Length: 65
Ligand SMILES: [Zn+2]
Image (cartoon, rainbow, N blue to C red):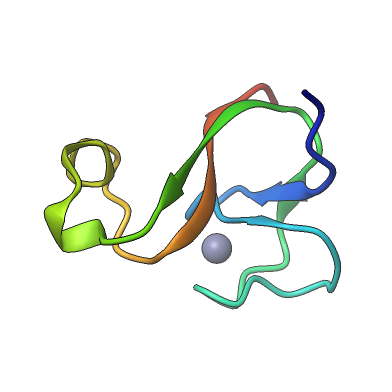
């Protein structure tokens, strides 16, 4: 399954359009990322804690570049 979008280099949030990250307002993105998690409740998610994610939505697991 292919997901369109680009991942924020700062917080890994994946967005489909726009030039600023809605989470951290960063403009540094990469389209080279692999895997993703969808965080619904960051405060209750072990994955979110481990990855340091504090916001909801789709986040890239690995950034390639
Ligand atoms: Zn971000």
